[in-house]
Image (cartoon, rainbow, N blue to C red; front, side):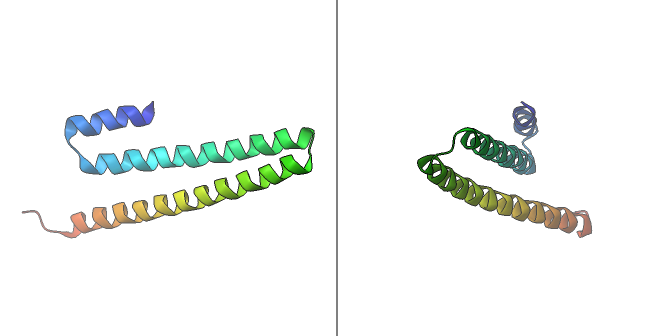
Amino acid sequence: MTAFVLFLVAIVRRDTSGFVRVRLLLGRFLALGLEFQLAADVLTTAVAPTFVEIGKLAAIAAIRTGLNYFLAREIKEERAELERAGTRSELEPPA
């Protein structure tokens, strides 16, 4: 809901940097959701583990860990780019 409101505000203001902020916010929520889903799968498997379920859990954990890694890397790169753009605009003299 928060991201949707920020998205609408960015549309009204026609602020392109607002879209990047919305993407970063959604990315953080997505990463958190992936972590919770992995924890839920681990707990589900812990109740009555079989070798098939453990194998499925390992595959799911590997996929979600990979997704979370690349998502976190993308968020870090976007933040660094925003900081560089903010610093650059502050250093430039007004036109």
